[in-house]
Amino acid sequence: MDLKQLEYFVRVAELGSFTRAAMALHVAQPALSRQVRLLEVELRQNLLVRNGRGAVPTEAGKLLLAHGRGILHQVERAREELGRVRGALAGRVAIGLPPTLARVLAVPLTRAFRLQLPQASLSISEGLSVTMQEWLVNGRLDIAVLYNAQPAPELDIHPLYDEDLMLVEPRPPGLPEDPPPPPIPLREVAALPLVIPSRPNAIRMHVEAEMANIGCRPLVALEIDGVSAILDLVADGAGAALLSRNAVASSIRPSAYRMRQVNEPPLRTRLCLAISAQRPATLTQQNTLDLIRHTLEKLNAR
Image (tube, rainbow, N blue to C red; front, top):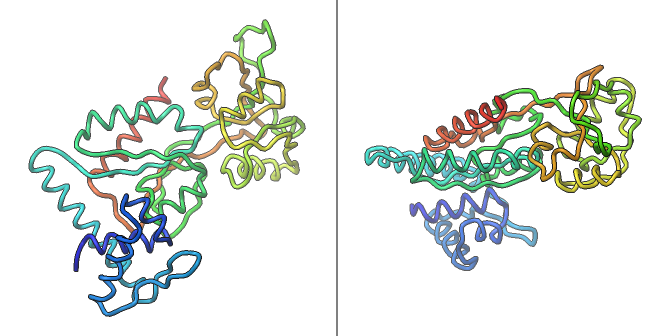
């Protein structure tokens, strides 16, 4: 069985499309289709049902997909072990980050990765937590940092820490930065016009759930998907926002905003690391997991 053909099949089955798989693998779609067809001929089994919406594994395809993931994982582990013999870990690691965290984590994480894993390559994508969970399952991502990740049999989830969501408002002209403003009860936050991401953003869902627990609902002034756009609109007076300290601190003009702690109850989200339970982490990925933890610890210690 040709490993390249097996890799092509696994990627098509995970992504559900020859087109998406060809883009992910950087090969021409006709060449990809031909190699998968040769694998089917060799195994005397139809592995994929091709239709107008993509490609779905047959029963035989599902069986080979389970074996293929394990085989390709073992091949990658063998390459890494050989790399360690010559003193380096290699391989590619695809990481997913939520937009609010990518702004502060991407640069220091990339620096640490290049320093400690110079023979490996790194890919960073931004996305919603719900979307990144899907990307972990279909193999587009190896590691994801998620907000309020929900348990799922296909994922291994490891909590990192809880992060406060702050009420972010425009700083009135001439208002000094100190002292910090007093906390604001969540019930009062519910009465304020909010510039907030659309569903199923994890922070949006968490805010709605916490307000529902005290019999409230958010007053949504604008639904905007993008931290920079949210902060620009807050500065322009469109409403307030609920974001982490890091999201504000990494903005172009953090001094343009005033942050207030939310209490009664406190508004916190849980940050988690997630990997696929179907594909055990390689040595390079395990080292990257440690790098993410250490980099986040340094950021929080500031």
